[in-house]
Amino acid sequence: MILKKDRVVGAMRGGVDSSVAAGLLLRSGCEVTGVFMYLGCMTSRYDTGLADDKDEKVSHVREAASHLGIELEVLDLQEDMEHIIDYFVDEYRHGRTPNPCVMCNRQLKFGKLMDYAVEQGADYFATGHYAQIQTISDNGKKQLYRGIDKAKDQSYALFDIARDRLDKIILPLGEYTKIQVRELAEQMNLPAVDQGESQEICPG
Figure 1 (spheres, rainbow, N blue to C red):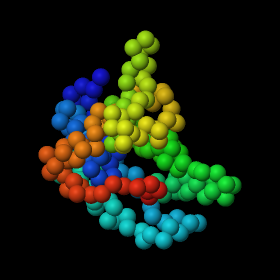
Figure 2 (figure 1 turned 90 degrees about the vertical axis):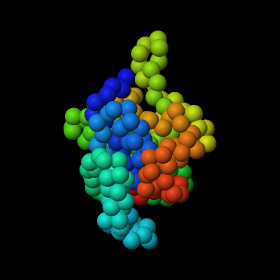
Figure 3 (figure 1 turned 60 degrees about the horizontal axis):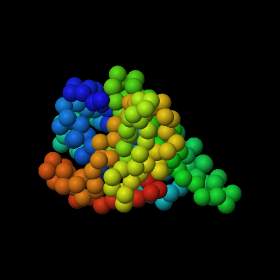
Figure 4 (figure 1 turned 135 degrees about the vertical axis):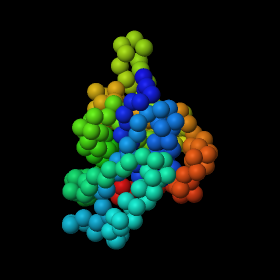
């Protein structure tokens, strides 16, 4: 159960979803800190054709955090992202269809990013995914479920997260539809309210 004054580190990307998730936690009385994992646009071995716009990306996320009145930490995980890209390219070379988001969620977002949150003394780690974590009544364990918005459900991308981590994860948007989240963004007057949807494959 989330309590007022619980310390929560929330993954932020500067967009509507992660910003609204942080805003909802603030409304519930939690002490929220944002964290952004910078994954880069280019790597030493694979050129995506995109310019490295780290300053612009970080500035955009800082704007969202500042609007909410929360501190933001930036973790540079470009080297870790190299391994995800290696996997992605290798799978295609072998005629298989990779799912880099699943691996990134397990190893980076709910791996290194969540580890950072725990190291900072956070009670919980939160993201803006459209999925739910509920307690199973017969044994008290946590289980991952689909979000109520079937068109936006992202539980499929989280299936590989270690189950012993679910006790410390909060997914505030699982009980909302995308339409409701955009309405909340307008109420919060978030700077990202007019942004379009992010698309896979994303550089973070």
